Length: 430
Image (cartoon, rainbow, N blue to C red; front, side):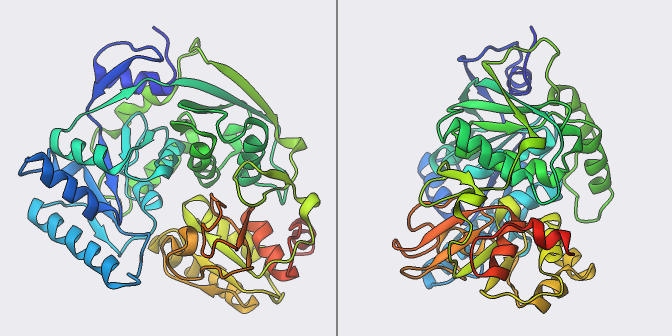
């Protein structure tokens, strides 16, 4: 029976062909938790199981409250670390690696054709590498730790057909914001977004991560870019690094599941011409309150946030550096690299020195102020232009603050201008 990527992954784990709407009980390949691990530990204790089902398949990465801002967060970190030692978890990273989703990809935990569960809503990002990345809640994760199983409903798939090419100054962030504008925040409820078309081959892994990361903002169960030559190039390069020790010897066996069958069925096809795409901005206080940048250009901002699991990668930082090179920021720009590896690469390539020369502040490799707990959070009446994924009321601080979502280039240009600004003129003059 022909299948989409999510159908093929779940069918493989179920041991039989599956159809959308079926309930299947499956064993995941890898599961991930972050600063919420201590809460999952408490729920796991209540199951009565003394040991987790498979220590090799648990990954723990602190990123939301790094460094810990108060005794409660510090205690949560200590409790999780104690549990990791007790259970002999070999993939416990603590505060030393960066944003969980970025690290999962860098270290080889998210692989084509695998089911990866994450106790974080943006675990859909793993689809950038052809994985079926599914967010689950803390209680569900505790059950998986105990039994090694979870039941899932097989989702329908929505095909996003991409043509054309992203023009200079227009990015994958603009594409996913455009999808939110057209499909709305519930437009893919419990569906898998599969990205197809001739334009996909031209998208970098970083751009694919941005698309799949924000699939959840459309209500999707997952976002997946089928594996191709670019996927293989990335993974084979990662396989050879000393940091990526998690690759199983047979990791390429999942590739066949990471590509849909030619006659796979889709609930709907939505087409986007990248040649016609303009820079987009999501206005307060919902992710689908999206408009062309030109409609909000000139809106005063008090600071910019460059980072998060959506847009904190080397490619994002380098683009922002191209915008600000030789210029001076008018408002603060806070830069949070997505991982320690990204930070080190950006330092070595001069990207961070360019950002600092313009006046940007480079912070820890972590989530930072993305959800309003750590770092450059907002006060009453303040406005932030952000490369992150959510702009809900109070998301980055005070309930009377405002967050506009945009691409890294627009974040950088807006901090130069002190108001929401198009990056394209700055890039033309670079």
